[in-house]
Amino acid sequence: MTPETGDRAPTPHANGRLKVAPSRVAIDFRVPSDVRYIEPLVAHVQDQCRQLAFPPRKCSLNVPVALSEALSNAILRGNHEDATKDVRLHVELDQHGLVLEVADEGGGFSIEDSTRDATDPANLTDENGRGLFLMQRLMDSVERYTDRGNVVRLTMRR
Image (tube, rainbow, N blue to C red; front, side):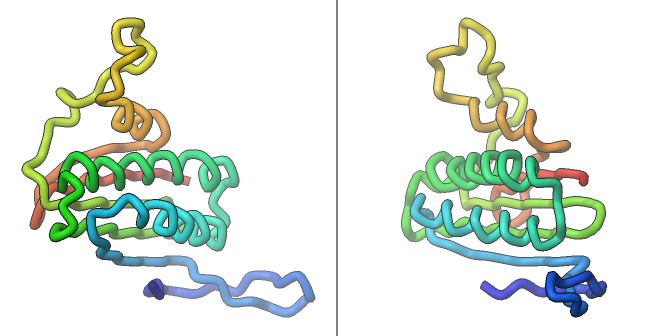
């Protein structure tokens, strides 16, 4: 799981030396439909966000919650935990923001029809639609498209 890095810019290092930090990172992962992969993937993306000096709140809350929800939806709902199906994660980070694309081999869904306001009293006990609700609150943009499967794109600006 080595990221591809783009341009590098010098940044100060604690001991006074210059350390080269990436200014753009692109990473692709392919994992089986198994929830055990969620935590290590999320941790890796968080680490990359920290290395590119994303705001701490976004690294510690927005990214892990939204990405965990997107990955779990792909594994549980899209691929129905079928170990013969893969989930793909494409990550792009740069000075402008973060783009996460989570793809599964499922049939697709409508974001509008699948999202429920979790704060509405009628939905307080309904578990369905909460993940998309959280993603939409924590990210700047949540989109769905098809490209060799079902893809959810999460975008967060700095």
